[in-house]
Image (cartoon, rainbow, N blue to C red):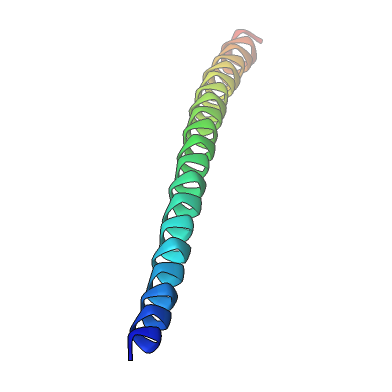
Length: 72
Protein backbone atom coordinates (compact mmCIF):
# COMPACT_ATOMS: atom_id res chain seq x y z
CA UNK A 1 0.00 0.00 0.00
CA UNK A 2 2.75 2.54 0.74
CA UNK A 3 4.16 2.06 -2.78
CA UNK A 4 0.81 2.90 -4.36
CA UNK A 5 0.45 6.02 -2.20
CA UNK A 6 4.01 7.02 -3.05
CA UNK A 7 3.38 6.53 -6.77
CA UNK A 8 0.22 8.60 -6.59
CA UNK A 9 2.09 11.28 -4.69
CA UNK A 10 4.81 11.32 -7.38
CA UNK A 11 2.14 11.61 -10.10
CA UNK A 12 0.55 14.49 -8.24
CA UNK A 13 3.92 16.17 -7.79
CA UNK A 14 4.61 15.80 -11.51
CA UNK A 15 1.25 17.33 -12.40
CA UNK A 16 1.75 20.21 -9.96
CA UNK A 17 5.18 20.90 -11.47
CA UNK A 18 3.66 20.86 -14.96
CA UNK A 19 1.02 23.35 -13.79
CA UNK A 20 3.70 25.59 -12.32
CA UNK A 21 5.64 25.54 -15.60
CA UNK A 22 2.45 26.24 -17.55
CA UNK A 23 1.65 29.19 -15.28
CA UNK A 24 5.16 30.58 -15.67
CA UNK A 25 4.99 30.20 -19.45
CA UNK A 26 1.59 31.91 -19.55
CA UNK A 27 2.83 34.76 -17.36
CA UNK A 28 5.74 35.34 -19.73
CA UNK A 29 3.48 35.13 -22.76
CA UNK A 30 1.08 37.59 -21.14
CA UNK A 31 3.95 39.99 -20.39
CA UNK A 32 5.11 39.81 -24.01
CA UNK A 33 1.58 40.38 -25.30
CA UNK A 34 1.20 43.43 -23.06
CA UNK A 35 4.46 44.82 -24.43
CA UNK A 36 3.28 44.22 -28.00
CA UNK A 37 -0.03 45.87 -27.18
CA UNK A 38 1.76 48.94 -25.82
CA UNK A 39 3.94 49.18 -28.95
CA UNK A 40 0.92 48.82 -31.23
CA UNK A 41 -1.02 51.44 -29.24
CA UNK A 42 1.91 53.87 -29.56
CA UNK A 43 2.16 53.19 -33.31
CA UNK A 44 -1.57 53.71 -33.71
CA UNK A 45 -1.41 56.97 -31.80
CA UNK A 46 1.42 58.15 -34.03
CA UNK A 47 -0.50 57.20 -37.17
CA UNK A 48 -3.64 58.97 -35.96
CA UNK A 49 -1.60 62.08 -35.23
CA UNK A 50 0.01 61.94 -38.68
CA UNK A 51 -3.38 61.48 -40.28
CA UNK A 52 -4.72 64.51 -38.42
CA UNK A 53 -1.76 66.62 -39.55
CA UNK A 54 -2.32 65.50 -43.14
CA UNK A 55 -6.01 66.37 -42.89
CA UNK A 56 -5.17 69.85 -41.61
CA UNK A 57 -2.70 70.41 -44.47
CA UNK A 58 -5.22 69.21 -47.07
CA UNK A 59 -7.89 71.49 -45.64
CA UNK A 60 -5.46 74.41 -45.73
CA UNK A 61 -4.61 73.66 -49.39
CA UNK A 62 -8.30 73.50 -50.26
CA UNK A 63 -8.89 76.84 -48.56
CA UNK A 64 -5.98 78.40 -50.49
CA UNK A 65 -7.28 76.99 -53.77
CA UNK A 66 -10.75 78.32 -53.07
CA UNK A 67 -9.37 81.76 -52.24
CA UNK A 68 -7.23 81.69 -55.42
CA UNK A 69 -10.29 80.66 -57.40
CA UNK A 70 -12.33 83.51 -55.98
CA UNK A 71 -9.54 85.98 -56.74
CA UNK A 72 -9.63 85.09 -60.41
